[in-house]
Length: 110
Length: 111
Image (cartoon, rainbow over the protein chains, first blue to last red):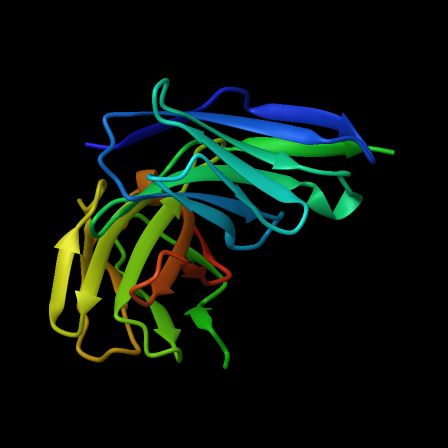
């Protein structure tokens, strides 16, 4: 089945810098990889997804990269802002189920 | 649209008590799921439903029951609460796309 992990439980960046959050997965035949953001005291919120037949997708200030050869997924946030402080989860959407990694807490230093 | 709503927001139970966590969505989504989130961990799937009348087990189903009598509602029942069920519970729904919409969560403490 799908299994998802994250490289670092915490990441601290300076405001205005770019953030890169990494994720590894194993044994997935899923079509979609998805990033969620969870602010303190709230439910996760969808950020961006990428299909397995793509290697890059861009959104507003975010870019997701998928390397299927090494089973690695990353989320890049450009010009990180205080509002980006949250826990970020990578996840795999299976046929019916969504499997989450453990999350990376992003902290922004002023 | 209200999106996904959950009640209650907080609950304290004694060991052995039963209760139902309510979840409702007004987006006419087919898929609904229940997750639990423990400190320092990602979300783990408890049960899910692909439509009214259809439910299935997720990763950690023991101690929980669900039913889906309508498209809108997907209640989660704790049969006999245990301290190991202390957690934050999230309900989510989605259409046939991949974006899941999560509720605000129910924080449950079992003493």
